[in-house]
Structure formats: structure tokens, C-alpha cells
Length: 418
Image (cartoon, rainbow, N blue to C red; front, side):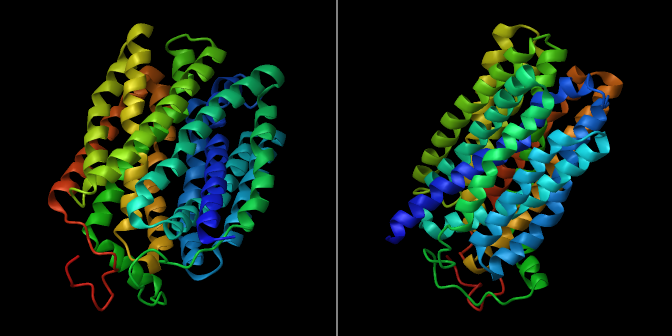
């Protein structure tokens, strides 16, 4: 089998895994109201903590898996991660206390950390730089589809058989995907980039290299604010529709899920295509596109959350989601493009750590905590503010930072111009 076919197969499998990654992640969002009325009797803060517990563990373990991915076989690590998170998701359907549910969701974070760091680095080694915008757009189209399936499948399973069954349905397919992941082609690192410097640098030296890379730092900081907003919206929107807008459960889950999948597919595809075309004119095209789109999305999100009229809410949410998803492919392409191939998996891992540590680790819990005191309708208003902050950081980075060469700063040639 030639390399092009191996790369194509890898893209398909990785995209499928990413789909179930987000299905597993957001199945809880479809169950918030059912959990509140279950014998577990959680508060909104505790429900938000389910998302936070997963993301805290995900964030803390991502750098460990990233370093392991830079030094050892990536496909095997990927398969182990997918197996762990799928088993933990299914196991959540057996819990008897909120503490047990928190533990199950935390273990999901361990498995997803392996996948979230290794997957993008494999893709970067499958395809040349000038195609990565479109390739990452395909890969990240799985986010809206998987998120929407989490809402729809979770809501439907909950409606038909109860909330426990939703976890069984969500976790099962991943056990099969784990076998496929372990058999993926582990392409040579930096296969489509300039010759790599040796990858034996210590972790401290690699981290200093990333911290000195201004383009990388500003891209990741903007991504953290963006992730805070998007994670909070995804986690609480169906609960907001049911409780604040009094939309029936099946309509809330299927309606918002439908919006996520359509806007995600269209927005992600369009963003990847525009980013690659714009890249021909400016090296910071990916950041410009992401900054402009996200800054435009923020006020539209606010309109959607403030308006009680369905004729205003639904169209505004569609436009806002389209603009937010346009950033997905370009900003992840930017992260892998501005670092040396020899430290790419670690760079992705540090990015994952940062965007979640500063972003959606806290937004589900903070929204829930504010909701317990001021109501959910007030709590969600912090999310458009975070989106605006992400757009501003990206535009600042695009206007002040040149694209760095594809070398780390400790390479002997790091002082050369691109």
C-alpha cells in the first residue's frame, strides 16, 4: 500500500475517532436535566464539575502523552487512549453516586489526552504544509458532527431508555476504533517538512523553545479564550434551552445538535478552504481568519442568548456557530506549522494543556456556579465575552508577529529568516 493511500486511510480513521471523541465528551450535555431529577440530585455546579473533572485530567496528562508521542510509537499509544476513554464512558452508566460519575468522567480525560496530542501530529506527518488547512478542516469537521451526535444520541437514548443507557451507547463504538487506531501508519516525523534537528532535547529546553515562539504563544492564548467560550456553550446550551427558553427536551437536543452539525461542517470546511487560499498572500492568514471570524461571532452570540424570541435566537445561533467553527482548521494548522517537526507532538500537547487549563476546564463549572446564584440565563453571558477576547488576541498576534521558520529556537539555524 503506497504512502498516499496510507495517509488517506489514516485521515479517515483519525476523523472517525475524533467524531466519537466529541460524542463521548458531550453526551453529558444532553443529560443535564435528567441528571438533576435523578437519585443523584446534583446541583448545577456539580453538573458543571463533570465537564471540569474530565478536562482537568485531560489537561494534566496531555503533556505526558505528548512527550511519549515524540519519543515512541504513536499508533499504539493512540489505540490505548481510545480504548481507555471508551471503557470509561460506558462505565459511567453503572455509577451509583455523583463521586463515581466524577471519577468515570475523569478517566475519560486520560484516554482522550493520548488521542488529542498524537492525532494532529500524525496528520501533520501524513500531508505537506500547503494541504494541512484542508486536511485539518476534514479532521475537525468531526467535532461538530460528534458534538451534535452527543446531544442527539444522548437525548434520544435518555428519552427511550434512561440516562444510563446514553453512556453505554456512546462508549461502545470506541472499543472497535481502538483496534483500528493501533494499526495506523506511523509516518516518519517531519516527512513533509525541512530536515529535522535531532529530537533528543530535554523537555525543559523544548518548553523554553515554545515559550520563545511568539507566534505559537499568541495563537495558543487566543485559542484558550475561544475554547472557554465554545466549551461553555456546548456544555450548557441544551440545558439553557430547556430551562430558560422552555423548549421541550427532544427539540432542544435535536435542534441545537442539528445547528452544530450543519454549521460545523459548513464553517469548518469554508474556514479550511479560505485559510489555504489566503495563505498564498500572507503567512499569518490562518490567524487573521480566525481572529476576524471569532470577533464577529461574539456579538451575534450575545444576541442569541439575550433574545427570548425563537425567530431571533435560532438564526443568531446559526450565524455565530458558523463564524466560530471557521477557525477550527486554520488555528490548528497554525499550531503545527510554526513549530519544528521534531517537537510537534509536544507542541500540540502543550497547546492542549494550555487551552483547557485556561479555557473549558473552568467554563462549565463557572457557568454552573453562577447559575446556582443568578440563574442560567445570566451565567451564559460570560461566554460571548470570552469569544471576543480570543478574537482580539488572534488579531493582535496576526498584526504584530511574523510567521516563524519551521524550526525550534534551539536549532543551530533558528536565527535564519524564513
